[in-house]
Each structure stands twice: as structure tokens, then as C-alpha cells.
Image 1 (cartoon, one colour):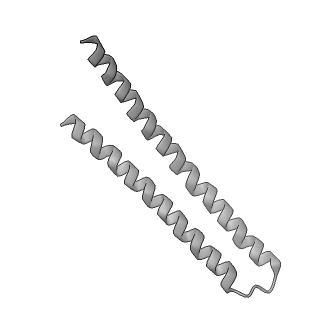
Image 2 (cartoon, rainbow, N blue to C red):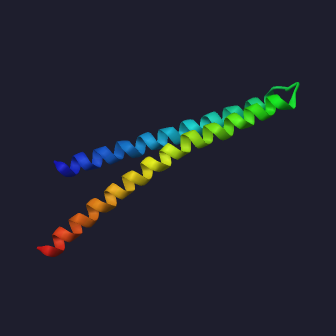
Image 3 (cartoon, helix red, strand yellow):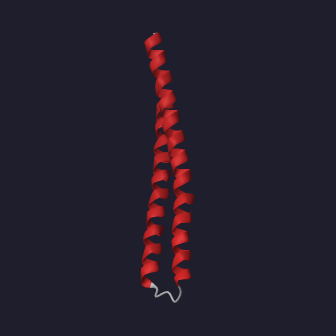
Length: 89
């Protein structure tokens, strides 16, 4: 039962991380289309939209990368503990 709980926990963590990445890609695509579609009267407007893209990229990808790293570390540590238990027996 513990294995199933471990699998479900990490499976949903991967699904959530993937959803965040998909959302990021979708918003990047829409903002790029908006930059191209709108005939911007001023270059400043275009720079504001590009700044939004960069800010949103960093603010979305950094937490996803951190949580992915944490999930991988937890899985690695648990696998190492399991190997140590198996080799002791």
C-alpha cells in the first residue's frame, strides 16, 4: 500500500508540473501572437509585452524546476534507502 501511495504522490506531482509547463507554453504562444497581431503605435508597448514574456517565463519555470528537483531527490533518496536495506539482508 505504501508503494501505491508513493507512486500516486509522485505521479500527480509530475502531472501538476506538466500542467504548469503547458500553461506556460500556452501563455507564451498567446503573448507572441498578441505582439505580432497588434499594430503597436509605440515600441514601448512591444517591449512591455516582451518583458511580460520574460517575467512570466522565469516566474513559472523556476518553481517547476525546484519542485521537479525536489521530487527527483526524494525518489533517489528512497531508492538508495531501499538498496541499502536490500544489501544488508
